[in-house]
Length: 80
Image (cartoon, rainbow, N blue to C red):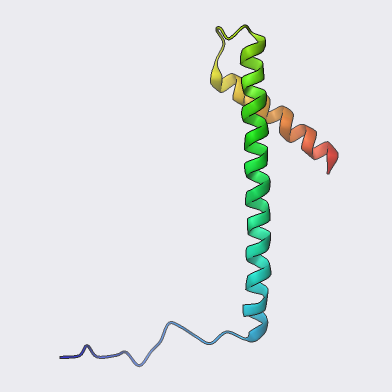
């Protein structure tokens, strides 16, 4: 026996302008994600540099990351 279909649908037709803007929204989201990946890579490299600067001994990886993150984000906020 076939399941009964509801008379109510959750899917509603979207106006064309909403569908068109959806593509540009996704492009914007992808661009932000790309920027965040680049920032994370910069932070990672700088945190590693801080560790090397200490002779690869002691300290805290978390502290290095926090310090690097603050420095990278500060540099980027000055540039933009």
